[in-house]
Structures are given as structure tokens and as C-alpha cells.
Image (cartoon, rainbow, N blue to C red; front, side, top):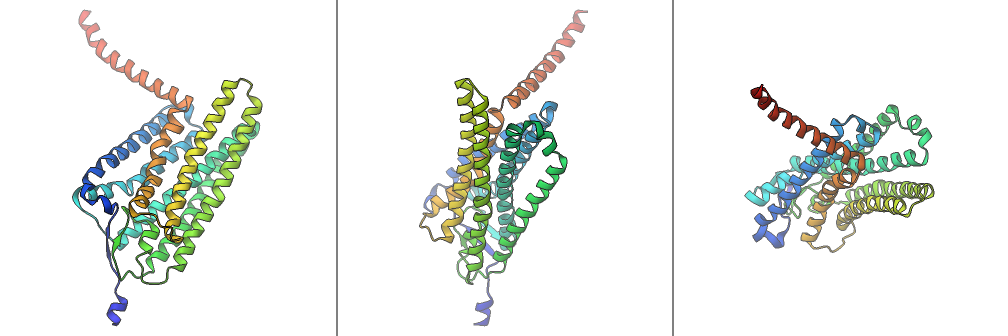
Length: 328
């Protein structure tokens, strides 16, 4: 009896999309395409911003950081998930699960804080343009970076530490495609009240704090732009840009909150739906961010075309030069 009481699983098996097990290899196709689009879009955006000197400003530095986070958070879960879908490599050790859990939630929380910083940066740039260089400097960036790392690291470290203290003596089947916090905690034999409280604290800390500040910033930005802009076309453009940013952010926070709270509040969501929402919470922002902050940004578009034209001119020069020599 004592051995049974002390027993705890050291390995777990993912069971995401249980209703689609027969078609699991087909599921790998859209997720592979999504992963490749995330890598291509964010890498291209990083390359353009790093290559064009005029884009070396605080706002574009923040976009670079967002690209890096998107690549890392998707890489933390998708390759391992694809191995499970294609080759049935579904097992993961408890240490590996906790590591994946930490980095997934840590990077997602970094993205939340970064979206808040980007909104505040635009607020200062548009509503207080004369004081922008005075307020937004390297010292502020270092303080924000330190605050972001400490906030996300301490909260997610506590979350993972509480999960590590549990015993898992019944099922070892994780009803997800990656090590989501509550998907693992729901398998515990011990009391999970502390884990549930920690999960709710994460929602309050990030969603409850970040969303109101982001919304307030964009409302102030929109108000300032509409007051300063006369033509209807420019007003519609400002409204459309702010609205698009807010919609993408709200989708990120809404889906993330539902996936976090579904276990905490015992919301009856089918496993397949909950797994899909958990994946979209990671994939959707990483896929659309290069479009929202890259393709739709005039300065980045111009930088991309400038690089493209330079590359074409270089290739044409290399091809034409030998012919010119032969003619001489």
C-alpha cells in the first residue's frame, strides 16, 4: 500500500484530437504548413528590419522581439507534436513535460507583455510626440525588459513548481498535443487547489492587467489621430489599423483565457475543441503578426522592396558584367 501511495508516473502520453486518431497523419499537413509560414514570415520580417537602417528604432525593435518570441513559442510545441502525429512518438518524460510547459507559458506571457509595451510605445509616440525621445530611451527599454522577464519568469516558474510537486498515480494520458498546465494538473492524485488558484492568478495578472491598459492606449491613440486627421480616408485608415490590432490581440487573450479556464472552472469543452483552441492560441498570433506589423506597415513594405530591388540589381550586374567584358 505504501508503494502504491508513493507511486507517480514519470512518463506521459499525448492524446490530442482523440476523435481524429484515424486521420492523425492528415492533421500533420495543415500544422506543418502553419509552422513553415510562421518561420518564413517572422524570419523575413526580422531580416528586413535588421537590414534597413531606417527601421532601427524602438518600435521596430519591439516587432523584432515579437518575431523571435513567436518563432520560439511555436518551435517549443509544433515539431514535437508533428513527430507524434506522423510517427506516433507521443511519449514525454515528466521533466520534459514541465520544461515544455514552462517555456510555452513563459514565452506566451512575454508576448502579452510585449503587446502591452508596443501599445504604450505607440501611445507616447502619437499622443506625446515631442517627449517621445525623452521618455522612450535605452534606460526605459532595459527596465521594461527586466520587468518583463521577472514577471513572466517568477509567475510561470511558480506555476511549474506547483505542478512538479504533484503525484500522478492514475492515468498518464495528457488530453492535449503539448504540456498545457491544467491538462497535466488534471491527472494529479493530490489536491490541486493551489494549482487552480495559480492558474487563475495568471489570468488576472496578464489578462486583467494587460488588456485594460492596451485598450486604453489604443482608444487614446485613435482619439488623437481622429482629432488630427481631416480627410475621411485617413480617418478610416487609422480606425481600421487600430481596430485590426485590437481584434488580433483580443483573439489572443480570449482563446488563451478560455483554454486556461476550461479546466479551472470545469467548463465542458470537447477535448478536440480544447486542443484546437490551445494550438490556435499559439499559432494564430505567430502567423498573423508578420502581416499585421509587417505587410500592413508602409515603412517595412518600402524596406522590403528596397532590399528586393537591390538584390535584383546585384544579380543583373553580375550577369551583365561578363558579357560586357567579352564585347570589349
